[in-house]
Length: 532
Image 1 (cartoon, helix red, strand yellow):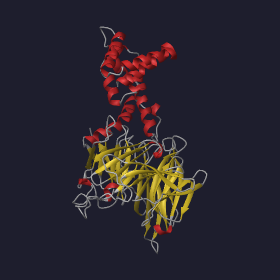
Image 2 (image 1 turned 90 degrees about the vertical axis):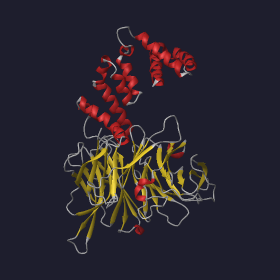
Image 3 (image 1 turned 60 degrees about the horizontal axis):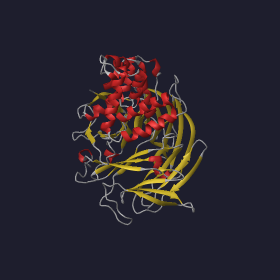
Image 4 (image 1 turned 45 degrees about the vertical axis):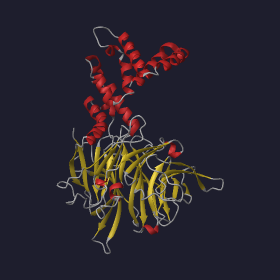
């Protein structure tokens, strides 16, 4: 906070004394500020000189300077500052402070909003600005309670295959297939739907857009990206063909304007592959599809620039161990090697083949040399789905090992610095019910939705209802703290006596609105309330 104040004073120097004088002052101040105690004394003395004996010194600082300070501090610290005296409390009750806070959240989380922020009342602005931080606090205090349980109504019997909440919390998108038992033979109809769920959450969520997908395809997964305008949404759909993965996959990019009174899905591009696409994501301007290569010692991916309909296939080199793709481009492959326990970075050679150029290994987990295998394997690596990917090429992933979970921060898709943070793994919620002694846990617990919160923590909700918050460590520490517990209630949720879900759940989290929920395979919608 003191360094933030120094930045404000440096700006004041620049405005009042010019660039040359500023450089001279900074050169002297850097030496003085080597001691934080000296810095405190200088700031306190400066504030006292601005004040008087009848009023706190900080209250005499111009309001535009105080607002500048709040832009460099957290919301909690800013509220603490503005509620110290009557003079500053006027700023707390004014629109500029809360508009600034919401603008910062929009820049970080980029929500798709159904309202114009400038037209909201001051109390509504306060609620919107606080929601992301209430989410973090409620989870840390374990004060998350089920508040809504409803059904997503469709004309026929429906099985849901994926669900994604649109950042902002107003809309939910689902992939499903409907079963028509009146036809002989029985027909399956795949659908993509958009639902209005709030905020606030209505008693009966309703469908606002529906699209019947290719008849010979089976929906598998969704990926969402912001479009060109504030209300545009890009929807990427991965299906496998002829109800069998062996027949290949069908990828689609669709557009929908959520501001329309009757929004409609529009197909922008499509791509058919001859192999099963086991995973899909967005990196930069490209859709990246990874292929399932069981029994092979290499991994493959398709990089598709759907805007100009160009694609290229990349293949990892033969490696000692199983590679999980984390970032893929024409110039770089970044992958987690689950056997050697390290990040491998591969770049294309003059011959066109990719070659490993460097390794990045966490200090907490011993790295094995090529040819050596660590006892056991990582269960899976979960890459945080990017939003704003065309502008933000930094990537975050989680690698779940037997006794720890690693957070992996990669700058510029792995071309820059790679940083590891180790978290103790709570196996209470990761046991395999068929083999409770297995150190690898239950895959259903790991494959989940994971997002970054407003404070850059990672929040994870598994299919079975395990909620985990990975706190960002302070001071560059390589060891972090996590909070993990189950949020499903056997009396209210569709769970069995041992706490396991009776059908598959598709979890979703919106860090902007504070919505946490899931859609079951049968179409049950669950949303949890954050109580403080």
